[in-house]
Length: 194
Image 1: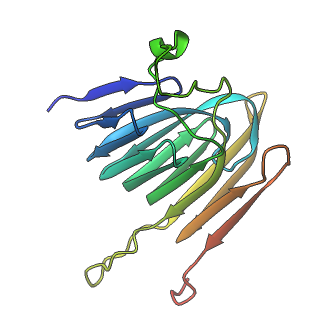
Image 2 (image 1 turned 180 degrees about the vertical axis):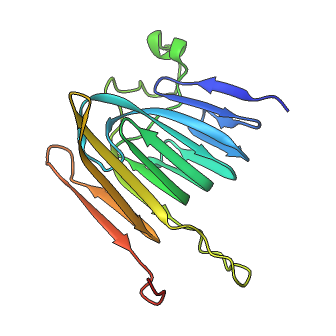
């Protein structure tokens, strides 16, 4: 198999099997893949000074629903943006607006008879991110790793803050546009010792 690659205005995808439906603004990548998307917020939902790239890698599947403002990933999902990175079995990301699958060259010179709305000039912001360890039953004696979210803050190349959250579920909900802040909830199975 050969690694396929496609690029839209603010979205780049890699995988062995990329299934694109531009009319409905959806992409499905069964199996291993990678997605890069430019966002106005970080993985914790904090507004950035300038848009930044988020890279996500997965092993099982990715489903992107542009009109649904949603993308899901499954299978050893890892995400990285600037000084933040995560690891989980499943990740769900919700955007503040629809994301249209418009090719770079098309978005610069829109076709007058095109039914695709013009992509806004601003990058999408993440409104919610949910990280889960796999809820499927496991064989006796096997346990999934916890979801891990790491964030680092540097000033003049000096580490000023390191934060690591480990839980079964991490959910991040951002304040509506124009408001500051975000809310993070981490759920831990209280029946497990330790």
